[in-house]
Image 1 (tube, helix red, strand yellow):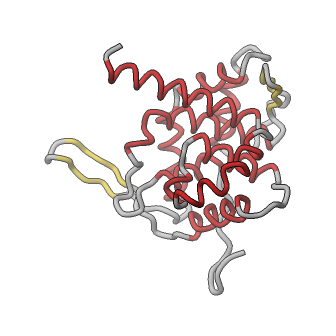
Image 2: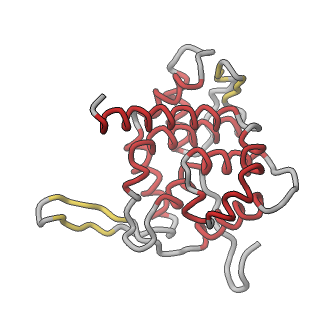
Length: 225
């Protein structure tokens, strides 16, 4: 569904959708609060797309590459190649770690793709006249609005979500993005719904555990223990 006079939003990967939600609409910069876990979340987004395209399969203890055929999506094919280099059947966390090592590269590629599609534009600047910064202001907000529309439709409806919507909710929940989009009362209202949906997705649960581990490590560093 889209507003009158708008063409449908482009089809995006989960990584592209996640980045759109993490960008500050005013500055075009990724919100600093998300920096510590964005590599892991991005890795999870890539694995989720590969799972939906039947390239990988999971159970609570392992992930297997079941099809090495390229998807035709450059980001996903690069991720598939990295995952396929590893021995099959390891815990999901091991594959998340492998892709996370290339997190900055995947983010840059995804943002550049959004620029190519006319969703974002590039704005280079200097911080203190020395440090180069790159921002990605929104040019066409339809893609971001469509992602949010899907989120709200899933959260405030009792219908069984389709697999792609299950994955999106899992990612957004693991990254604690809902408080940015909903009031405190609304977050409380959908809490049980979110937990029900999260249990449907194994990779999303693994992303959530990895993010919590990162947050714990940061907390220990800050307190000096």
